[in-house]
Image (tube, rainbow, N blue to C red; front, side):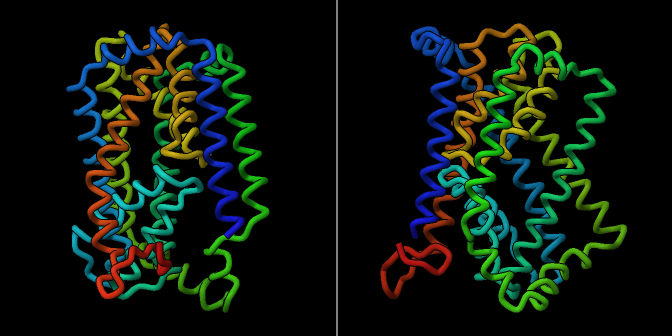
Length: 319
């Protein structure tokens, strides 16, 4: 119990320190004015494109789980939205464990195998990210410019990442305790879904759906930069790479603070003013946060409400 609260507190501390840092050199009044100038329709478009990326992830999850059970679109979509919702509240990607638990609860699949299907998704995320990096090199996206103009930001991001890893490595989590018991059997369960996709059709489908999700994420950022910079797509690609790096740091809720640093590091070199960049970052995150609450909360309540006891349960534990 103590370790659990300790992790949550550290996540919130990372968020608080990051927010203090990003607002240090911005007048609150100028930020509010910039926030009022945000095009609400563009934020709505951005949020809808994010939702389309979630649909692509549903198709991915269907490919990796079909060897166990025939999960409905609603089940898989609900799991993903609940995962994003919890990730927006708690640090260390706790939503991924809830996704695995949701899958186990609603189908014939073990918890370890369910975690493995999510692991496969992350492997393809890395592959897609590498493809984006190659595209960035081809189009000569000047990442060095961002690093040279914003050295303090880069140092802070890496420092936070190192501190977070050191802190979390000292505590035991639920997944470790599960794997340590009957490790050979658990390892076999974990590897099974990975071997299951080792065919050309599955790999092509997974790569296609994953790239589809990433391109939706790309355009969800791009619509926010419309008319703000002449080189809109190059700026978007730079921002997407920085945001992806920022998401590796498990701050809470929803990486607020970390994402603001990523936006500043990526967009300041393109000549955008600090208050406008911050207003864009908050609009982007709030749109995603609201969509995960609207879509994820009903699934969370319905799937974790114990009708007999009239109590709310997550991961088998009462709240």
